[in-house]
Image (cartoon, rainbow, N blue to C red; front, side, top):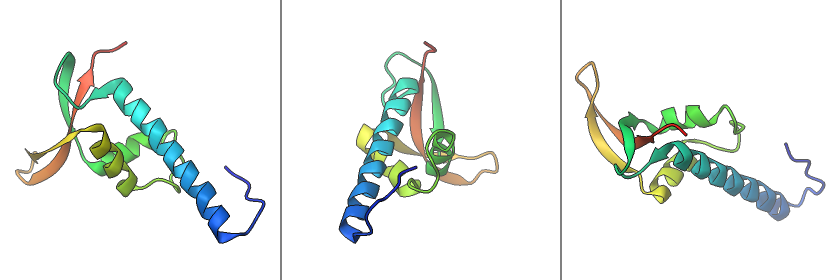
Length: 104
């Protein structure tokens, strides 16, 4: 958590925005440690919704400063693709395609 010493709106926004970008960078690093946006040298193809990826991150990133929009931005910036996937109940849902890397 961050202690804001000033109540100046622009300063508060800058500090909050800096924290948000730090969290996004942490998320990018973690995603690329375990997943690849490309099928080269991977073990398994997985499909995850934006909310599922957000849930994965909530174990290490506070839930307040990050939301599904941030997850979407991160996945898009890293080059993960979206595919239409048939769910067990036969509904079609767009999901992110993540290629699980081999264990380290």
